[in-house]
Image 1 (cartoon, rainbow, N blue to C red):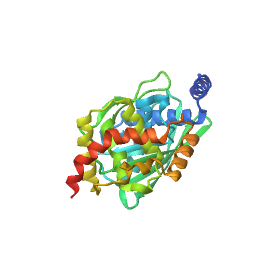
Image 2 (image 1 turned 45 degrees about the vertical axis):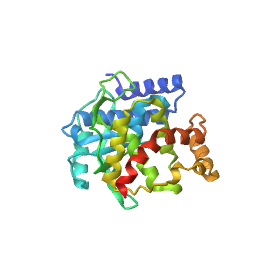
Image 3 (image 1 turned 60 degrees about the horizontal axis):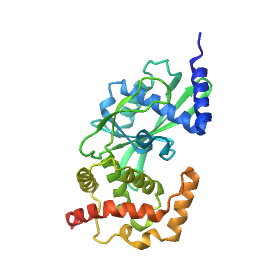
Image 4 (image 1 turned 180 degrees about the vertical axis):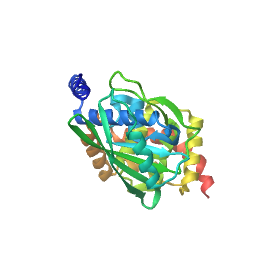
Length: 286
């Protein structure tokens, strides 16, 4: 009888060597993909929407930054630990042997997510295994955000020749809007370099509708009740010249093993596209 886990592991190792990709990162992506597949086959596929780094990987491939977590938005489902345990126990035990992956439903744990008291959510951890290879997966589930104009149905890219997960995902416009909202909310103390990188990449790719982006920004800011001062540090020249921020940017690129991009170029791109959008919403916050 064929040892499917061993065969899959060998194929993943070959891909990692050929593409000079970190095997551990590739393995995590594979586990995430196969969990999404099980979710897509469950009765809960319409209750979750993909966001975050795993979505950016689906949109950009290897050009995206490495991500270790799976981020989802809960839709029409309770922000309740017992409910999430029940849902993901069912997802993890969906019968599918062809990918060699086993998700241990008995290992699932949940903890509360709070970001400075805002946007509460639930963090799940579950053990995934491929034969004798084991990996803890983290799934962060948020609640209460609004997607503009609506979730997008996508076929999530597969690493091996298997059926792709068909899942709901954020629109590009909403991805940009939420990251932009975090920039405005954090202001001059913002150290979330990944958001600057992600927004820059998405704006450079140009696969968004400017009118929808403006609508998504307005909707996100209104929903999160984000103050919008007319003069914001993000849009000042000094923001891109701050030595501490430049040091943080260089460290982020180095740690993430990303190509060098001048922070001034990133700031210039964000200013070009998003400063006019911001000016449209500042009167709304008065």
